[in-house]
Image (cartoon, rainbow, N blue to C red):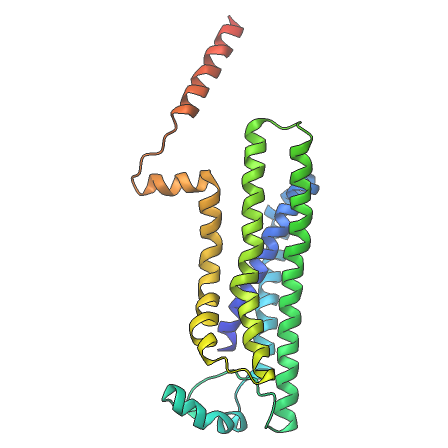
Amino acid sequence: MSNRCGFISLSYALLIIHFVYRYMALFHADKLPIFFQPLGIIISIIFLLMHAASWSVICQQCLAGNEEVREIISIDFLENFGANSKSLPMLAAIYYDASDYIRFRSWLGIFLLTAFSFYAMSVYIILGFKIMRKITLMQSTNKLSKNSIRLQKQLFQTLIIQTCIPIIGSFLPTVISWYAPIFGVNMEWWNMNVATVAMAAFPFIDPLAVIYLIPSYRNAILRKRGNIVDDSSHVKTRQSSRMQSYAFSS
Protein backbone atom coordinates (compact mmCIF):
# COMPACT_ATOMS: atom_id res chain seq x y z
CA MET A 1 0.00 0.00 0.00
CA SER A 2 2.82 2.41 0.87
CA ASN A 3 4.64 1.60 -2.36
CA ARG A 4 1.49 2.19 -4.39
CA CYS A 5 1.16 5.62 -2.79
CA GLY A 6 4.78 6.23 -3.75
CA PHE A 7 3.66 6.36 -7.37
CA ILE A 8 1.90 9.64 -6.55
CA SER A 9 5.27 11.15 -5.77
CA LEU A 10 6.71 9.46 -8.86
CA SER A 11 4.25 11.33 -11.07
CA TYR A 12 5.24 14.57 -9.32
CA ALA A 13 8.92 13.83 -10.04
CA LEU A 14 8.25 13.13 -13.72
CA LEU A 15 6.54 16.49 -14.09
CA ILE A 16 9.41 18.23 -12.27
CA ILE A 17 11.88 16.72 -14.75
CA HIS A 18 9.63 17.87 -17.60
CA PHE A 19 9.50 21.44 -16.29
CA VAL A 20 13.25 21.52 -15.68
CA TYR A 21 13.84 20.30 -19.23
CA ARG A 22 11.56 22.99 -20.67
CA TYR A 23 13.34 25.60 -18.52
CA MET A 24 16.78 24.45 -19.69
CA ALA A 25 15.64 24.45 -23.31
CA LEU A 26 14.78 28.15 -23.10
CA PHE A 27 17.41 29.50 -20.72
CA HIS A 28 20.40 27.13 -21.04
CA ALA A 29 20.03 25.39 -24.38
CA ASP A 30 23.76 24.68 -24.55
CA LYS A 31 23.50 22.41 -21.50
CA LEU A 32 20.45 20.52 -22.76
CA PRO A 33 22.41 17.50 -24.15
CA ILE A 34 23.29 16.59 -20.54
CA PHE A 35 19.75 15.18 -20.17
CA PHE A 36 20.49 12.50 -22.79
CA GLN A 37 23.98 11.57 -21.64
CA PRO A 38 24.49 8.58 -19.30
CA LEU A 39 25.11 10.85 -16.31
CA GLY A 40 21.93 12.84 -16.93
CA ILE A 41 19.86 9.68 -17.35
CA ILE A 42 21.29 8.17 -14.15
CA ILE A 43 20.59 11.36 -12.17
CA SER A 44 17.02 11.43 -13.47
CA ILE A 45 16.44 7.79 -12.49
CA ILE A 46 17.91 8.33 -9.01
CA PHE A 47 15.75 11.44 -8.58
CA LEU A 48 12.63 9.47 -9.53
CA LEU A 49 13.47 6.60 -7.18
CA MET A 50 14.27 8.94 -4.27
CA HIS A 51 10.99 10.78 -4.78
CA ALA A 52 8.96 7.57 -4.74
CA ALA A 53 10.94 6.05 -1.86
CA SER A 54 10.58 9.17 0.32
CA TRP A 55 6.79 9.20 -0.06
CA SER A 56 6.57 5.45 0.59
CA VAL A 57 8.73 5.65 3.73
CA ILE A 58 6.61 8.50 5.14
CA CYS A 59 3.43 6.49 4.53
CA GLN A 60 4.85 3.32 6.04
CA GLN A 61 6.44 4.88 9.11
CA CYS A 62 3.78 7.44 9.97
CA LEU A 63 0.46 6.20 8.57
CA ALA A 64 0.58 2.40 8.46
CA GLY A 65 -2.28 0.87 10.41
CA ASN A 66 -1.23 -0.96 13.58
CA GLU A 67 -3.44 -2.85 16.02
CA GLU A 68 -4.56 0.30 17.85
CA VAL A 69 -5.53 2.09 14.65
CA ARG A 70 -7.42 -0.93 13.33
CA GLU A 71 -9.29 -1.28 16.60
CA ILE A 72 -10.30 2.38 16.69
CA ILE A 73 -11.78 2.38 13.18
CA SER A 74 -13.12 -1.20 13.15
CA ILE A 75 -16.78 -0.36 13.87
CA ASP A 76 -17.02 2.51 11.37
CA PHE A 77 -15.09 0.49 8.81
CA LEU A 78 -17.49 -2.44 9.13
CA GLU A 79 -20.56 -0.21 8.85
CA ASN A 80 -19.35 1.78 5.85
CA PHE A 81 -17.49 -0.87 3.86
CA GLY A 82 -18.70 -4.17 5.23
CA ALA A 83 -15.12 -5.36 5.81
CA ASN A 84 -12.95 -6.22 8.77
CA SER A 85 -10.31 -3.54 9.25
CA LYS A 86 -8.01 -6.01 10.99
CA SER A 87 -7.54 -8.09 7.85
CA LEU A 88 -6.85 -5.36 5.31
CA PRO A 89 -3.76 -3.27 4.55
CA MET A 90 -4.39 0.39 5.22
CA LEU A 91 -2.89 3.81 5.77
CA ALA A 92 -4.69 6.06 8.23
CA ALA A 93 -4.22 9.34 10.05
CA ILE A 94 -6.02 9.72 13.38
CA TYR A 95 -5.85 13.21 14.85
CA TYR A 96 -7.95 12.73 17.99
CA ASP A 97 -9.17 10.05 20.39
CA ALA A 98 -6.00 7.96 20.17
CA SER A 99 -2.75 7.52 22.04
CA ASP A 100 -0.11 10.23 21.95
CA TYR A 101 2.09 8.08 19.70
CA ILE A 102 -0.65 7.56 17.08
CA ARG A 103 -1.65 11.22 17.09
CA PHE A 104 1.96 12.40 16.88
CA ARG A 105 2.89 10.17 13.96
CA SER A 106 -0.37 11.02 12.16
CA TRP A 107 0.27 14.75 12.40
CA LEU A 108 3.92 14.25 11.41
CA GLY A 109 3.05 12.09 8.40
CA ILE A 110 0.43 14.50 7.06
CA PHE A 111 2.74 17.46 7.61
CA LEU A 112 5.59 15.77 5.71
CA LEU A 113 3.33 14.74 2.82
CA THR A 114 1.91 18.28 2.66
CA ALA A 115 5.42 19.78 2.60
CA PHE A 116 6.39 17.30 -0.12
CA SER A 117 3.36 18.29 -2.20
CA PHE A 118 3.94 22.01 -1.66
CA TYR A 119 7.53 21.64 -2.80
CA ALA A 120 6.48 19.93 -6.05
CA MET A 121 3.70 22.45 -6.76
CA SER A 122 6.10 25.33 -6.05
CA VAL A 123 8.54 24.00 -8.65
CA TYR A 124 5.72 23.81 -11.23
CA ILE A 125 4.52 27.33 -10.52
CA ILE A 126 7.95 29.02 -10.32
CA LEU A 127 9.46 27.35 -13.38
CA GLY A 128 6.16 27.63 -15.24
CA PHE A 129 5.99 31.37 -14.56
CA LYS A 130 9.58 31.89 -15.76
CA ILE A 131 9.01 29.80 -18.88
CA MET A 132 5.77 31.61 -19.75
CA ARG A 133 7.42 35.00 -19.25
CA LYS A 134 10.31 33.95 -21.50
CA ILE A 135 7.93 32.74 -24.22
CA THR A 136 5.93 35.98 -24.02
CA LEU A 137 9.15 37.99 -24.35
CA MET A 138 10.23 35.93 -27.36
CA GLN A 139 6.89 36.56 -29.04
CA SER A 140 7.02 40.32 -28.42
CA THR A 141 10.47 40.73 -30.01
CA ASN A 142 9.14 39.74 -33.46
CA LYS A 143 12.43 38.03 -34.22
CA LEU A 144 10.79 34.64 -34.65
CA SER A 145 9.15 33.23 -37.75
CA LYS A 146 5.41 32.72 -37.88
CA ASN A 147 5.84 28.97 -37.43
CA SER A 148 8.06 29.51 -34.38
CA ILE A 149 5.58 31.96 -32.87
CA ARG A 150 2.72 29.51 -33.45
CA LEU A 151 4.75 26.71 -31.83
CA GLN A 152 5.62 28.87 -28.83
CA LYS A 153 1.94 29.77 -28.35
CA GLN A 154 1.05 26.08 -28.39
CA LEU A 155 3.74 25.34 -25.82
CA PHE A 156 2.53 28.30 -23.76
CA GLN A 157 -1.03 26.94 -23.65
CA THR A 158 0.24 23.44 -22.91
CA LEU A 159 2.35 24.71 -20.04
CA ILE A 160 -0.61 26.46 -18.43
CA ILE A 161 -2.66 23.26 -18.62
CA GLN A 162 0.20 21.15 -17.29
CA THR A 163 0.58 23.52 -14.35
CA CYS A 164 -3.12 23.44 -13.49
CA ILE A 165 -3.77 19.70 -13.89
CA PRO A 166 -1.59 18.45 -10.98
CA ILE A 167 -2.85 21.22 -8.73
CA ILE A 168 -6.52 20.53 -9.44
CA GLY A 169 -6.32 16.78 -10.01
CA SER A 170 -3.88 15.77 -7.28
CA PHE A 171 -2.83 18.43 -4.81
CA LEU A 172 -6.18 20.00 -3.87
CA PRO A 173 -8.15 16.71 -3.49
CA THR A 174 -5.51 15.19 -1.21
CA VAL A 175 -5.07 18.31 0.92
CA ILE A 176 -8.84 18.60 1.40
CA SER A 177 -9.05 14.91 2.34
CA TRP A 178 -6.18 15.26 4.82
CA TYR A 179 -7.25 18.41 6.63
CA ALA A 180 -11.06 18.47 6.55
CA PRO A 181 -11.35 15.77 9.27
CA ILE A 182 -9.32 17.99 11.60
CA PHE A 183 -12.29 20.37 11.64
CA GLY A 184 -14.83 17.59 12.05
CA VAL A 185 -16.00 17.59 8.42
CA ASN A 186 -17.27 14.24 7.15
CA MET A 187 -15.37 13.54 3.93
CA GLU A 188 -16.72 10.06 3.15
CA TRP A 189 -18.53 11.11 -0.05
CA TRP A 190 -15.63 13.33 -1.17
CA ASN A 191 -13.03 10.63 -0.65
CA MET A 192 -15.04 7.92 -2.38
CA ASN A 193 -16.31 9.90 -5.38
CA VAL A 194 -13.95 12.84 -5.96
CA ALA A 195 -10.50 12.45 -4.42
CA THR A 196 -9.86 8.85 -5.47
CA VAL A 197 -11.19 9.46 -8.99
CA ALA A 198 -9.11 12.63 -9.40
CA MET A 199 -5.96 10.90 -8.18
CA ALA A 200 -6.49 8.01 -10.57
CA ALA A 201 -7.29 10.26 -13.54
CA PHE A 202 -4.50 12.81 -13.02
CA PRO A 203 -1.63 10.79 -14.64
CA PHE A 204 -3.92 9.92 -17.57
CA ILE A 205 -5.30 13.41 -18.22
CA ASP A 206 -1.93 15.18 -18.22
CA PRO A 207 -0.52 13.54 -21.39
CA LEU A 208 -3.93 13.73 -23.07
CA ALA A 209 -3.85 17.52 -22.68
CA VAL A 210 -0.44 17.65 -24.36
CA ILE A 211 -1.60 15.42 -27.22
CA TYR A 212 -4.71 17.53 -27.75
CA LEU A 213 -3.00 20.92 -27.66
CA ILE A 214 0.07 20.14 -29.80
CA PRO A 215 -1.00 19.48 -33.43
CA SER A 216 2.02 17.27 -34.23
CA TYR A 217 1.02 14.80 -31.54
CA ARG A 218 -2.68 15.10 -32.30
CA ASN A 219 -2.18 14.48 -36.02
CA ALA A 220 -0.01 11.47 -35.33
CA ILE A 221 -2.81 9.90 -33.26
CA LEU A 222 -5.40 10.71 -35.92
CA ARG A 223 -3.30 9.06 -38.61
CA LYS A 224 -2.98 5.91 -36.53
CA ARG A 225 -6.75 5.78 -36.25
CA GLY A 226 -7.13 6.03 -40.01
CA ASN A 227 -8.49 9.57 -40.04
CA ILE A 228 -7.47 11.88 -42.86
CA VAL A 229 -5.32 14.83 -41.90
CA ASP A 230 -5.08 17.66 -44.36
CA ASP A 231 -1.42 18.32 -45.06
CA SER A 232 -2.06 19.92 -48.44
CA SER A 233 -0.90 23.32 -47.24
CA HIS A 234 2.38 21.84 -46.04
CA VAL A 235 2.82 19.95 -49.31
CA LYS A 236 2.17 23.08 -51.34
CA THR A 237 4.64 24.99 -49.19
CA ARG A 238 7.33 22.37 -49.72
CA GLN A 239 6.65 22.26 -53.47
CA SER A 240 6.80 26.06 -53.67
CA SER A 241 10.07 26.08 -51.74
CA ARG A 242 11.59 23.51 -54.11
CA MET A 243 10.48 25.53 -57.15
CA GLN A 244 11.97 28.72 -55.71
CA SER A 245 15.21 26.94 -54.87
CA TYR A 246 15.38 25.49 -58.40
CA ALA A 247 14.73 28.90 -59.99
CA PHE A 248 17.38 30.49 -57.78
CA SER A 249 19.98 27.83 -58.66
CA SER A 250 19.17 28.13 -62.36
